[in-house]
Amino acid sequence: MAVDQRPLAIAVMGPTASGKTATAIALAQQLDGEIVSVDSALVYRGLDIGSAKPDAAERVQAPHHLLDLRDPWQTYSAAEFSADAARVVADIVARGKTPILAGGTGLYFRALLQGLSPMPEADPAMRAVLSADAAERGWAAL
Image 1 (cartoon, rainbow, N blue to C red):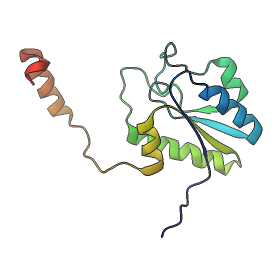
Image 2: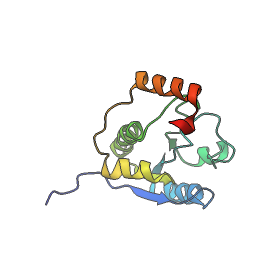
Image 3: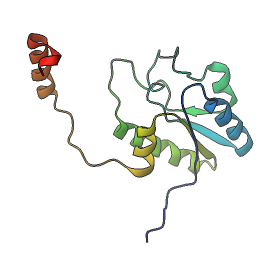
């Protein structure tokens, strides 16, 4: 049996507005940690209302990572999150800190902790064909 070589990290999981941010901040302060957002909405700039994104005062209390990475019209996949989060976790551990994974996006947690099945990249040409067909005949027809 293979030994898990991943660094120790604490996971704080749950639905929006369940107290994850406050818990993660308290843990970060007690354990000399840094928070890694595991939330698919928080990667987008400007999506602050309705997402429970940590505000400026909360961000000062503990370092936060993977917030405000993209504009709302830009894509961001679970695979991209997994690679970004693994890099950030490694950086946190290299500085002698404790990574605290905080969020409510189960797919992101699974992608980081268990990996994803290999899948082909999205095909922009096929998307264009489908979008044109949908514009002509409607999405219901597809």
